[in-house]
Length: 503
Image (cartoon, rainbow, N blue to C red):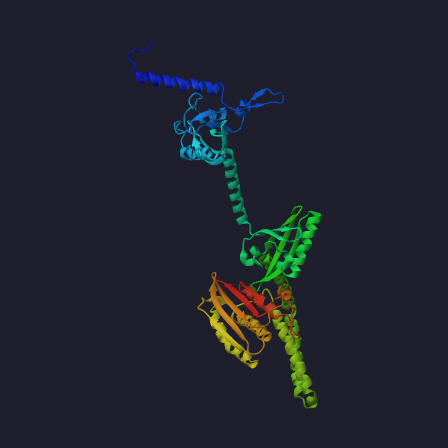
């Protein structure tokens, strides 16, 4: 019996729905999956393997209707088992399921009879987001045509989380690496450049991007290269950190470096290079000032006591030189007086080194001091066929002791003039830089040998036959009393003394 009030069309619709539900129940109870045979020839259902698979498995026909889905698909989508059979992903309203992409790849498999792969995403009924990788494999009928497509879905959520964590970790490492002031070099055990991290390219001896694949001996000067190679060999053999200090002239400036080399693995080492130029200079300054202080203390304690007898002896020699009976010794007396004057000069320089020497600091303009002594410098330069150039910019007044600054300038200028050949020029410049008043004295000599650079300003160190080794020592002492710093840049084309006064 049937309800007479129902139309024929309604009855047909209900019968069609009942038929679909029967098909669904049949598919759930007996899914259409291939079977394999064991060694005894008995069929073994493939269902357990499919149901326990870590991947989602679907069977889809050419109309994009789902014929089968394993329990993982049902769990992740949240769709009841009796609902998805015969429905397309679009009909199941899986948001972001990329129905167009699915359709394109399904049609491709049916057309080419070849597997296909793609990546997509969907949001289930619980508003959970899933990323997956789909592999589509054709299933053939007896006549060789594609009957359906078997889809394997691999959840990429965990992989994406891992990649995201890896990306965050890499970002943190980049930030940490960027904050490291040291140069990091990855080398083979043979000293070949493999990789690097450069915080300050301006302090590089060579462009490391062009050094990959080259050995240290090809890139660096022979002396530091030999030191580093020896340290690498000891690190590889002894498996302990090796420390090497070396120096290099880069852009006409001498830099000091400390390299720590550690064995990275069986085939490579890590070299951590730190620029210790500032620390080395501070140590040298400290050592120099200690020596200056010692010499100054000696000068202060005995300088006057030595000067007084010298003055007495000089006076008697002048008196004897006037006596008629000593006329034949006049030249000898003159030589003796000259030597006493030289000794007195040295004692005066000694006294200039005294740490507690009284200075008369007054507001003065450095340009005025330079202009005042320029004629004296020019005349000295002209005698030896050399010239002086002044490049004085507008600068503020400073607290200066005029006599001491005059002595500092003359000492450095005289050294520069002596280092130059005829027809060369010495240049004095003043300007403001980094909130400091700068004075540079640049000669056109042959430069200072690297082995002498760390000894500049050391009392009694000189390369001149008649030098006392106190001229530059006095300059450094004067600079210290004026809260100024002296830096030196040298090359075969000349040397520049850079004196910076704090404002």
